[in-house]
Amino acid sequence: MIVFVLKRLGSAVLTVALSSLLVFFAVQALPGDVAVQVLGRDATPEAVAALREQLHLNQPAWTRYLSWIGSALHGDLGTSLVSGNAVAANLGLHLRNTLLIAVVTVVVAITSSLVLGVVAGLHRDRWPDTVISWLSLVGMSVPEFVVATLLVLIFSVTVPILPAVVLDGPNASVAELLPAIWLPAAALGVVMAAYIVRMARTSVIDVMASEFVTTATLKGLTRWRVVTRHALPSALLPTLNVIALNVAWLVGGVVVVESVFNYPGLGKLMLESVYDRDLPMLQAIALVSAAIYVVCNLAADLAAMALDPKLRTGRRTATR
Image 1 (cartoon, rainbow, N blue to C red):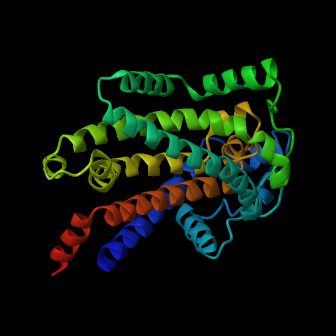
Image 2 (image 1 turned 180 degrees about the vertical axis):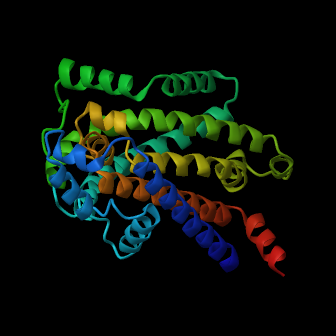
């Protein structure tokens, strides 16, 4: 168990390191001169040269990368070219705002989708399965911005009980943002739940047809005990990776939904950084997003090991 965790941690660190390398050189490869973009086309050559010197753009790319990643390891992600403030402080505020939506979405969407997926799998080819499968297919097919627009039309226009857009900035408190998180969370939850429902349904059907479930049934165990004690732990294993990817997708910032609701989260910050050519901010957002994906996948692997004793036994055997 310990060896497996250490290997996964090492793999996670290597993945983040490679991601930082790709992110840095991909951002540096963007066309145009950053100094000219920041100062404007009317800037004098002297001002452009001074800014290039200030941003160390005259240094080789490898030197700038090593300097950037070394500072990042100490918590210094650089200074924003737009605001002049520390990137980490601004990034932290937007990440906090995205986490508000993500927590609500994860709790509601994962709980409801797992329940619906299990119900559909246990009632295969009957009316509950038909209704749930049809709804999940609709959720997978409809784009996020369409779901968001429909929610605004219903809950902000027809029945005006929730705000359509967020007027507060990233510095707003949690209490100020609380009324505005429900529609974005609902829009994201519909799409997220649809994928989890499909995976959970398929897993339950496969597990219920397996030999160990048949053996447990023949031993006289009740259906409730067969499902909860034997089928569900195995059925959840393939679903964990789907859940992990969806959680990382949420926390990493959903650009479309946050733009529709003008929500000051990580996705909206990324769009603004691209428009303003704020390279330090873009690099920091990409690095944090990569780290979130790695952490979520690591958590899924550890949860799978906790649910399946065979994985723990296999790891022990392999290390002897």
